[in-house]
Length: 194
Image (cartoon, rainbow, N blue to C red; front, side):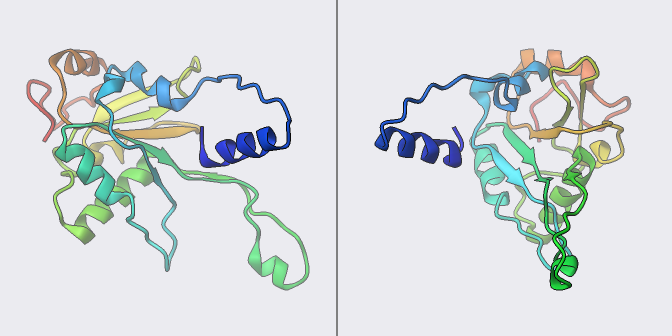
């Protein structure tokens, strides 16, 4: 459960309100459909949209930690829904901006920027194997594997998107990923992730 869900459950139980949890499909489990083994994942991170004056990289140390332990990192990509239009609010009107959903392409660009800025070697934009995911579980789902530099140029279509930064990969994981690799990828599927 997310923190919000946990809080709701605790408060409901304190008030004597019965709580039943009905599990739903989730990216946390669906990510395994690309062939990466779920027990090889480390901490999950969220990547927020970069803004002109706000470019957070708080996710970076977790990627570095995961990869240092050979673990994959599932990246949840930002969703902006019902964001207020502050200019309209200043004029006394309540207006919401159109929804925005981060794409794998944007996430790849932001991760590349984070690595260039921090330069701690958490991953290589041109060599580390990553997997872009879109609309998992739908008939039009998309799974594409390649480096961040390669993924930022791919077409993933409509949201929702997620991204995986691979750690050490097992030969069975690599065998499964072969079907999703970008044609001509610089990543060599005959070795471990770099």
